[in-house]
Image (cartoon, rainbow, N blue to C red):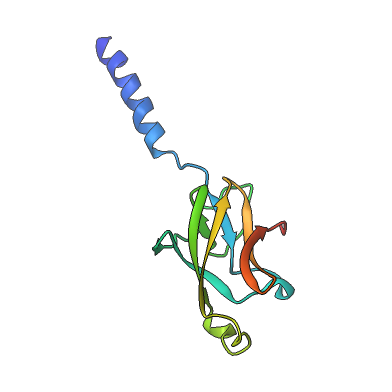
Length: 124
């Protein structure tokens, strides 16, 4: 009986550690052509970006490997995709922006006043 009382808290703690924390998602792969900037997220706070690959929460549906980021304020490094370099030759090939991301929200890259920024992505 005593063993059960010891095991129950251990199981609860180990299950809690395995639960994924909510993330923000940046759609830089599947935006409509009129919203496409050519930029892709390549790093978050200087580390390679993590891609969702099927880990996206059910509230956000996508098969594309979207950027998957912890909530909070981050420095995002964006790089022009090779397919868009010629079309966007007047833009910097790599930029770093700062953005505050909320958990379970979906964002996309947009151009505002000639500069890349993140905006909410309302596409479903």
